[in-house]
Length: 193
Image 1: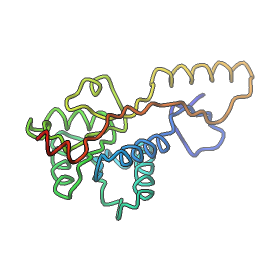
Image 2: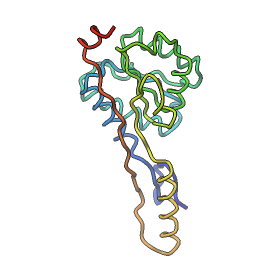
Image 3: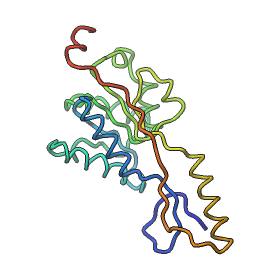
Image 4: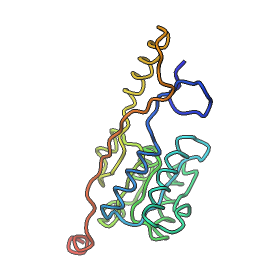
């Protein structure tokens, strides 16, 4: 068989996206472009993908010398109520770049965020997993686009090659794309408010 995802079990053929590297690069890029103080609305910590994404995020924060990066993550955000309460808490703690662990959390937040908060130009919202809905969202959402269709195709191709006796790599990581819009400079925020 071929696993869609990642495991530490030896001798398992795996196809996945490098979530750690993608989230590290995404977070580092947003911070370097001036998107501001980060906070992360995380899903269940039990999910391997959430732990891998959070490690990439934390590594980027440590690289940017942000103190106590672990305190910027709120775990177990699963409902719209959780997302709104988490958003309020992160904002109260000074975060103005709100990362969402995935598109589900981001959609929950955007669907229930008051219009006055959506209209703020000094807040960026970003998702560690992009979707069609997030491409159309207002405000614009920065996201990492992973190709789920290509993931399935690659797994099927590897399985066929394996069944025909061909040597195949144990781990295959697929590409991803960062969808990033520029942050507004502080002087732009003041003049446009």
